[in-house]
Length: 179
Image (cartoon, rainbow, N blue to C red; front, side, top):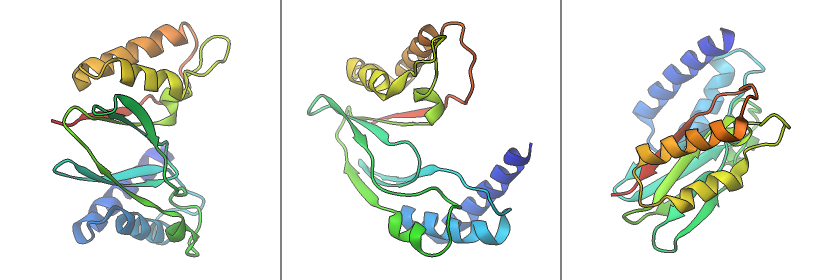
């Protein structure tokens, strides 16, 4: 319950900050500074913040999992894995200097997947992880499908992989397909 209440506070803080700042790196920097003022010490979290305008994404990653980018032009899946540490770990300027903003220019048919570590770290009964390679393979094998269809394929593959193993973390993801 404590984590849920803290995330409500973080969400409100993020909304307030994004009303005055509009660059992902600036927003994350301000969020990190304000975490130390308004949220309990020892709280940290990872996140990816992206600004989407037309077919261009400006991405800043604060310790979160890398994005998967499927290029329809090249028919390849790549990780967008720029630098950045988790929000709330330090307040001495190291956070700001660790952040790297990345500009991704996309084309029609490209697919961007944001996901939590609970997806790739899902384990089966012999404690093997689902892994990033399986997720990339799903993305590369289904580019003609809609985001909803890809979502169903991912959830089905995770369920088959996991078998009767318990779920230990959230499985959260967003699939964006460029029109």
